[in-house]
Image 1 (cartoon, one colour):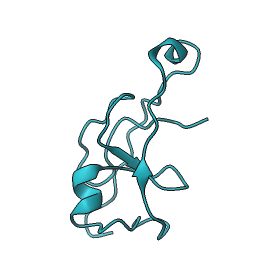
Image 2: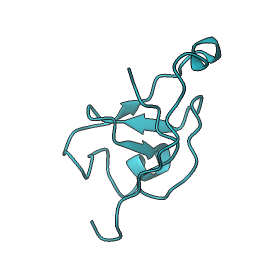
Image 3: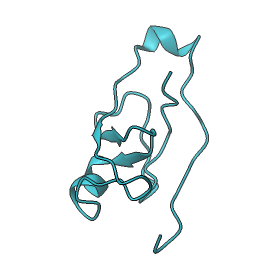
Image 4: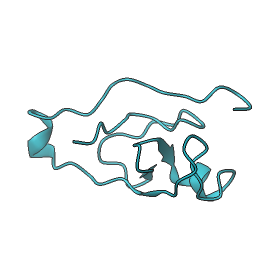
Amino acid sequence: MLELRPNCEGCDRDLPFDSPDARICTFECTFCADCVAGPLKDVCPNCGGNFVPRPIRPAAALARFPASTRRITRAAGS
């Protein structure tokens, strides 16, 4: 099951569970569409993979399977 991380690892923008702007790689590294299209050029800086739009978990499933609240950010220059 996806973690549905709450923020962009690049710019720390909020990405709620239903955000259409969230992008993930195969390791669930999470970035916003602006970071992916801009500085990252569709390549994950953590694993080298590409990005796809993150699926949206139906609201009815959130009570049983809540989104993550753990924020992850990349260190400047890494």
